[in-house]
Length: 457
Length: 128
Image (cartoon, rainbow over all chains, first blue to last red; front, side, top):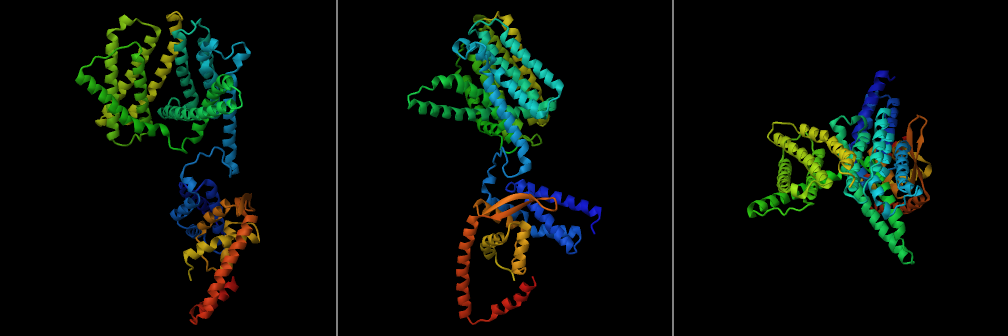
């Protein structure tokens, strides 16, 4: 007769066996459940025949067969499983269905809400037309990001205190985007439109990471999420473009011009809803599919490093002067952002315990050469800043450049320390994640302070 | 006597289909039935039955459903479909042809060896 001690040890043994099986990619958890039922039946049969529980377990496992051979056999039958599939709504297991489906429904509803929100101002006399372009560009992020924050608030079951803060941030954003007397099509309006999403993205991060926002890991997850979201959004946008092209083409051949519908409904509403849908996809896929951002980083880090080194070398050897133009610094902001992105996403995918390797050297070359190139540009523009004058655009661009420069410069120092074995990789990670709020704060400053400072031009 | 792997593999589908044609069943019971029928001579590695069942499911020869067994555990039951029955009939014809061909040549041969072994296995079969 099995004593309680035996019962426990059998359960433990089965647990262990189950976890071995779970590690096999080709064997899904439904299959594990099926095999487990078999194993238990077998054990029960053997115990009835007079074996002790642990003996019965051993025999049953032996009869089940070699796990490698078994998983090979499963892989042969389900070869598709070796291609990691994103199962959004599991179809063959009752238990798993509920959370996945609710998640999908909530995300879909919020996506629709974002699309509808975009159309609400029309009801209040602000139609989606060129005349109101300023209103719509300033508020673009306010149509979408509240839904996204709502999605994470629901998903992470945020604490009421966090919710209150997020609500305050959103209301403040709505106020600052609309109360100032912006000059139509002025540069302040454009600056607000560009910086408000950056500031609000920080709020999204707080909702995304929830109580892990204070931790390096939580913020790093948010960085990973942002990168994947960008890639998914680009893919969805590409698909949407193909869809739109076919829609126009099909209606054109029956003599209907679909362009008004496409321009005022399909593209704006689709673009708004797609943000929520893409976020939900990234959330759902997480561990299932390889992250794409680090893969792209691997491809482009060497290319960008080579490009920058070649640029600096050419500059040095030919002694050419920099052909300074008004908008050139903007381009360098973009360059620094790309370099920062390459750095961030290679950090996000790197195992901090690994020793320095060639790829790390490449990263440092990339960052240092980007810093040098930017320094050259800054020096050139600094010499003529009085001539160009301090327009709001130039101050914003310059501010962003300085923030990026500080971020990258200190990263380079930390990276070099790590390469020389005097620092740990985690301190670099910590620096990067700690620095995130600076971008949000600067963006918020541009939104709040610039309009009165520069008289709303 | 151990039956070679190729034969086991080739006969697995018709055997499983035939057992399911008797009544709906689940993995462990199917294996028990195979042991019973073969008098223990057809030793399948238990786990290997499941990829076979899944293949038959994919080919729509069987349907699966989850039920809660009397033990309280969830159990996956399989049921033969009409396509499965058609496949079974076809397999049966093929195996009959193979069997009768072999029988014919066994009869033509005069070596008595294998006949003895079959005879010795027969009581085992009845025992089961």
